[in-house]
Image: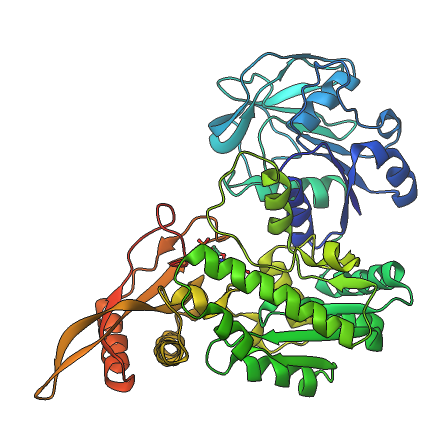
Length: 512
Ligand code: XMP
C-alpha cells in the first residue's frame, strides 16, 4: 500500500492513477489527516504531492513529522520535495514566479529512482513546476539530477530511501515519469503489484454499503458508460435498495434506448423505470432555436421528470451519479472562478439540493478508461463499455435550428450509417467521438434526372484525451466518399455531406 499525502495539487489524482497502473493500492489523504491515516494504513511507502502553497509561508502545510521517524521510504514531488527538505533541516527559498513548463533534467549521479530508466550524463525532458526551490539540502541528501533553474531538481538520500523531484513525474508531459514512480513503488517501497480492478470493485462495494446502510438509492441512467457502470456496481452492493430511472427524452440515437433498457432489465435483471417523455421534451423544444435555451430547457425538464418519477417510487435517501475524477477537478477549479460559460452542461447536478438527497458517487476517483476497465470487470458487454461519449441533451444539440421529429429521424439514419462504416473500417476505438449533424440549410442537387433541394449533413470525428481539447480525425478521402455516398443514397432528406475539419479550440466538439 502507498499513502499519498495531498497538499492540494490539481494533479494529485494522477499520482494515484500511476500507482494503480502499477497494480498497487493507494489512498489519497489530505495532509491534515495524514498522520492518522499513516498509523492505520501502515503503508510501505509515502508520496508527498505537489500543492499551491509555499513552504516559506508562516502556516505552510507540513507532512506529519512522525513519518520521518519511521523506516518508510518517502517520495516528495514538487511542494512535497520542498516540505520534506525543510522538515528535515534543509532550506527553501521563495519568491520565484510560479509557472509550469517544459524543462530538461540532467542526471549527474546514479540513483535507485533512475534504475533502468535514466542514465548518468544524459538529459531528459520533464514537466517542471518552478516556484520555490530547495537551496540547501538536509544532511544525508545529495543532488542526483539538475536542471537549468533548479540545482536540486532531483535529490536522494539512498540510505533512508528518501527521494524528491522538483518536476511532476505523474503527468504525461514527463515521458519517463511513470517509470520513475514505478521504481519508487515497486523497487524502493517493495510493493508487489497484485492490486487490480477486481480489488477496486470489492472495495467500492464495501464503501457503498458503509455509506448507504439500509437507505434507498435512486440512479439516473443516461445511456452512457459512466452511469451504467455506477448502476451495476451499486446493484451488486445494495441489490433491491436501488432503483434506476431512465428518462428517454426522445433525443437518443438509433436503437439506444432499447439497448439500455434490455441491458438492464434482461441481462442484469436490475429494476428499471423507463420514462417515455419524448412528447414532453419535443413539445417544450418546439420553436426553440437558441442553443443555450435548448440546453436549459432540456436540463430543467429532465429534473422535473426525474423528480416526478422519484416521488412515484416513494422517494430515496441517496442519489447515485457516475461522476468521474475529471468532473471533480473541473467543478473544483472552475466554481466561482471568473470563467465564462461556454455551454450550460446538462447533468443532474441540480437534483440533490432540490430533492434533499445525499450523493453516492462510486466512480469519483476514476478516469474514463478506468471506468471502462471496471465495466469490463463487472461483465458489461465490450460494445457498451467502449462507447463514445454522448451528451446529456442528445441529438438536440446536433440539430442546429428548430428540432422536429422529422429532422431527428433523418439525423438518426445518417448517424447510424456513419457509425456503422466507422466500425466496419475498424476505426471506432481510435476516435474519441464521431457523429453526424443535420444542418438547418438546404442546398440544390441533382439525382437521377431530377432536381433535389434538401438538407446538408455534416460529419464530425475527433481525437481527444479528455474532451477538453480535440483534433479532427484525418480520415482517408475514400472512406469519407463511401460514407457520403451511402448517406445520400439511403437517407431521404439529405443531398449533401460535408466533413468538419475544426479542432477544439477554436471549435467545440459538439456544434451547439
Ligand atoms: P464540447 O462540445 O463542449 O464537448 O467541446 C466536450 C465533451 O462534452 C460532451 N458534452 C456534454 N456532455 N452534457 C454532457 O453530459 C452536456 O450537456 C454536454 N455538452 C457537451 C461532448 O459530447 C464532448 O464529449
